[in-house]
Length: 350
Image (cartoon, rainbow, N blue to C red; front, side):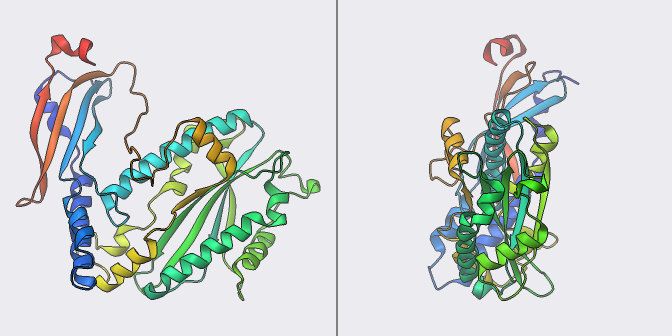
């Protein structure tokens, strides 16, 4: 139902995910201070501690009720910050959806596939070297003749997008880094007589060769529903969240029950060092060209805007702006500033 215009609507802001991420971030900051050499991570820990102290939202009234849109805040952009990784993941999903919407309309016979490429599990101290091996293997993989035979278009170009994910086994403490590779399969890929189709066995062999592995690595390949056939559907947009989710699950690092570190501070610092300065996403030349055409800025650029420019419902009416501030004593967000637009001025302001 539409809003009746009372200021009580502004207090319906869902604080739970923001407060949970803020508390996790504070624990991560404490762990970084404790895990490194004296003073080694103090500046990073301070940035994470200050991150998200103030959140600024514009509030709109729609037929589904009032909705907030984030328009400002203080953010650290650290890869060890759950608040920033949530915002980054959301913007990355939006950008990839834009690119694939444009691509599928221009290439209506192509179909998106999701390839998962793994490497043997490792301990925290080996994580940095393992990630380097993983990235080097990917470069060999996408340049391999068999990969190009499967996925190159008539111009000889392959279209793909990759992300890195790291999970941790709570029982063994082993880390499981792996890559998600979205690749566009050209027309004729699924016809066996074209020589394009890549079986699971062929994929495992090709990835094992690229990895220089003395074992058979686990791989997976499957179509992505709703991404192909000349359009990107709502199901397709939802499916893309698998590709654009967080690089690490913060529930692997911090207990969701106690909000205490689930690993040692030293191990936390190892994870940070493994990710430091590393490209978390990658894309082929065709996807880079589409991103440039859409005026997209890489989400990992220091000045990248993580705001969401998606259109509001046509009936949306601007209600006003609200600012929330983190209260250290209560460990919650509380509203501290409210600019409310009177009903008679809403149409001209929105």
